[in-house]
Amino acid sequence: MAKQLFMSYLRLVSLLIISCIFSTAASGDIVNNSGGPIAPPDNDSVGAFSTINIAENELISQVHLSIFGANHTWVGDLHVTLTGPGGVATVFSRTGSASGTGVGDSSNLFGDYSFADGGADWWFEASERSDNEALTPGTYQPTENTGSISMFGDVFAGTLTAGDWILFISDNSPGDTGGITGWGLTIQSQVIPEPGVGIFGGLLALAVLCCRHRRE
Ligand SMILES: [Ca+2]
Ligand SMILES: [Ca+2]
Image (cartoon, rainbow, N blue to C red; front, side, top):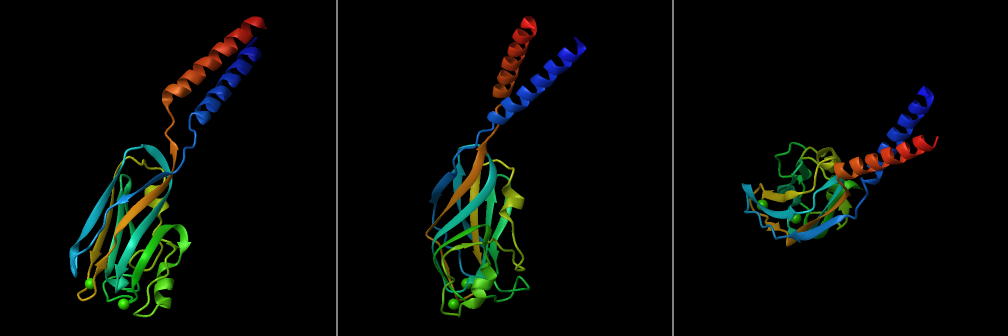
């Protein structure tokens, strides 16, 4: 009898776990490309920003940032951050200036650029371009102002999507200017487990076990 009861409890725990797993169904990516233009004032750390509000509330696994229509004649002037409900991450900053405050790399931005963990080396790409060349459009690893990697995953993974996402750009040296025409986010996420579903699954499992126990 004790063994039967133990086995019943074991089955119940297993079914509870399974019901919780199935209530954490993966959803599609959240895609929002409605970010507006950003034209930071020249040589002013106050900068400029644009906001995207995400209504869906899901659990983040990865964030992919897209910048559209970038046009600037000195990438080393720029400091760019992405702030989400879960924190703030550097996108790129004073590219090519190891001190974080020097003139940095003189190459240009022209076109669309994406930033995500696992992307190409941004500083290396800048170092390969001359003063009059633009960095090649593509997907790049977010990078700190020292040239070290900035991981979007360290800031956003495991946090929630809902709320304001802010892209900030400042231009920190005089002379060269420019900005972007728009931006967007593609967020890989999962539906938050609903406790009600887990409890319902657990009650259903309990009812099944009671029926079986009566028959045995
Ligand atoms: Ca240039
Ligand atoms: Ca400038």
